[in-house]
Length: 268
Image 1 (cartoon, one colour):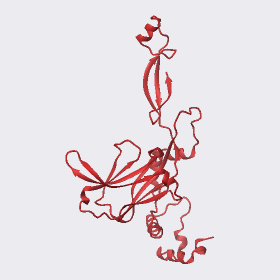
Image 2 (spheres, one colour):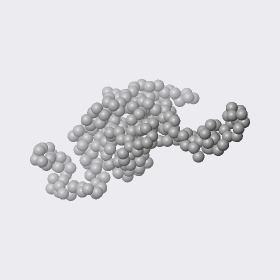
Image 3 (cartoon, helix red, strand yellow):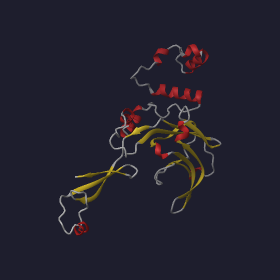
């Protein structure tokens, strides 16, 4: 059933607003074609007016060039299509990656707006990971995309803080308000997104894609030099063996996963 059969009044209103009532076929975009910026912007405005949510959510390809570059850097397509290659070494811990978008809508009203900023942090990550944005030019009546990221599911979620700079040599700041988004809570939502109130006039929305298995991150670190039997070449071993020469000389490398856990040893 076509939309004009199910909701004829709404369909006619939308067509009138888009000024295409008499030229419907001119607005049809075939597979492989790229919609014009004017068409995308007009659709975005209608979408936000109808559903009060951003049009360009996580997983969309409205800005195909930017999205394609980022996904290529994170091996997104390969990770989404390939099966788990961890067949032999079950000790490797799989990683799960997902696309995350954070949107904001509203107006900041504060006497110290020039000193206030937003800080985004993951709930489980390195403590120096802080993404800051000044709030002095963030007021907007429509949804605007604040951050577009690719996060591991192990980070558990995001925390957004409103902070105020205190000045001084150490550039200290104090937290005024904060909200959190949990990946588990968002996965239980049918739309895979949540909206939280940061202030009486500020709304924040986070959108994610379902987690997919990502490529493994392995690191090779130097280890001891060993003989044919795997014993370290040293004076201590020689004394234990009554100074009988050790046979063979192997360079050893220990392979760690992204969490620092020892996976296996390579001998050369």
